[in-house]
Length: 414
Ligand SMILES: Nc1ncnc2c1ncn2[C@@H]1O[C@H](COP(=O)(O)OP(=O)(O)OP(=O)(O)O)[C@@H](O)[C@H]1O
Image (cartoon, rainbow, N blue to C red):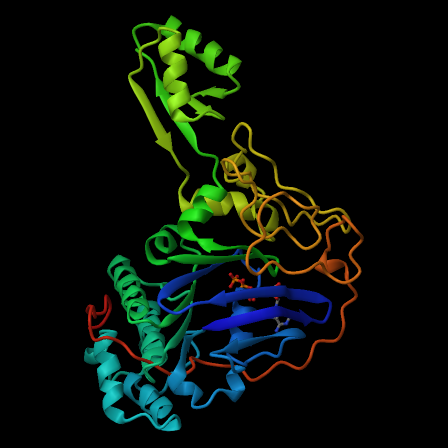
């Protein structure tokens, strides 16, 4: 298990990670999500002992990485697939990592097979495509047959077959009881791969929950209701009745109605009482991508000026709360997501946010020092102490198990 407690990292006056507390448990794929620059790589580097936290700590199996006995056989990581000596062949690259960690050479051939690079094992990696490089990085992570695996954007550059292979690999590693922590920007892929999500924005924890809970907490569920096309007056009649009952009703482009604020059985009863026949009454829920976009809207640092025109900033659905701005510093930030159905906010509010009635998440961080009562803390408002010197640059940390199941041939292995 990976456990971070109050993890904070500042680079000069830049707070990359602030007061981050979470656990990554074995037996599941945990997705690590956040907009560009939100601190995912920094967090992974601290987990691997490659950067020193400014405050807080992070352990793997109870030990900081650097004190972990036989770390290369316990933890494997893919951080930067390009961090290889391009003049070496794939096999020699893995052999050198294996020798450093006392891993037998036969394991190198095993992992080359697992990642589908056996055909190009004797080629220099500088000629590798992006996808081949990713596979080599994954092979390095699997080398020591570790119980804990970290992957930073493992599907970057992979073709659909490669993406499917990574998905199956992650799932099979987790099914073997390993701890699998994987960052990605591909929401559709995360929805298929991850069981649990840790979402950060501007270095702070936004959510720590199952994929299912995340979607339902951050999307306004709605009902689609369709009345007979041939009788438009029924649509008007139903709209009035639903509105009167407290629902919010919006027309859909195809003539159906989008209803929020009323449960499906109630909509059905209202239609029946109003003598309106229905051609459709169906529940709808946002995708992980929609839920993620909604949650992280206020924490995106880099956004094209064309986003608004292109509709990439989604309007809130009727009844949903807009992101809650943080007073001070003018930082749009730690916002409450739109409330789910009942129950309010299912994850910890930003530090110091006046208490939503929601249950606090298991790792809700305490208010930051100096937080005014009732006022949210803003980590970026704090004076920036000097960050400790960074640690050595990594490449893939050792490791690896890997069920020899599911290896598919490299998309670009020739
Ligand atoms: N060595 C460093 N010196 C100064 N600032 C840094 C350093 N490393 C990271 N940062 C800053 O810390 C913030 C978090 O960066 P990080 O790379 O961890 O984000 P990320 O979530 O991994 O981003 P992406 O999704 O784009 O890879 C960024 O603003 C980044 O510029």
